[in-house]
Amino acid sequence: MKKNSRVIFISHGGGPLPLLGDDGHKEMVECLKEIAKAMEEPSAIIVVSAHWEEAVPTVTSARNPPLIYDYYGFPQQSYSIEYPCPGEPSLAGRIQQLLQKAGMEAELNDQRGFDHGLFVPLKIIYPDADIPCVQLSLVNSLDPMQHIRIGEALRGLRNENLLIIGSGFSFHNMRAFFSPDTAESRRMNESFEAWLVDTCSNKALDENERAQRLNDWLNAPYARYCHPREEHLLPLHLCYGFARSACSDYYELEILNKKSSMYLW
Image (tube, rainbow, N blue to C red; front, side, top):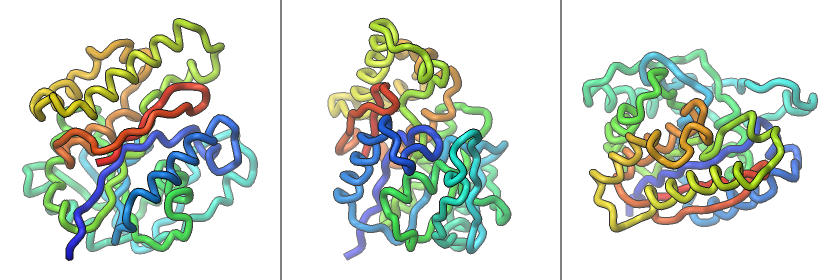
């Protein structure tokens, strides 16, 4: 029997810290391991990372993409992490075709490697690195509805035992991570998280309402405090576009002393 594709939005933490035993990422590591147990192993993985933006949706198409250590100021071992998963050029080509069929420009890139939005969480979820992966970029317009539509365009893959991962962070205010935690900062963080959980999980919402809420995410409580720039939230929009339903499970946790969340469909 053919297995359906799964889709998940994850909060991927700070750079390589989840792989270095950092105390602020213990819940995240345990949460990803729990999620891995809840899913059957896919035949291939598509990762939409917050760390890659292009003018049009672009897909990695190399057979063996290198890793991109796209972080700075971490211990030396951070730059020798390995995750030698193969690419999947044929899947990359089909993604491009589906996007073009939906009326979007889309490109393949056989030079770009995998950034830490892919290899850090996958080293926790599937440490053997034996599942083929492709990475799909965000679009640098950062338009929320455009990313929902990209996800919708990929729904032709939903019966193919794939795993689509939106790799971002439900809270991504870099200054706040390094500032003292106060009652006010906690209230702002928790208010946005409560809105996000309700938006993604509330089965009383119809899908037009849910899509509209995600499109209008700037109206959520303290949206710009939690996301001064929205690139770490938009992988969620693409995940929702693929799923077009309330999530089946959500996970609330602390990462770097901030309330964060992950969503599984």
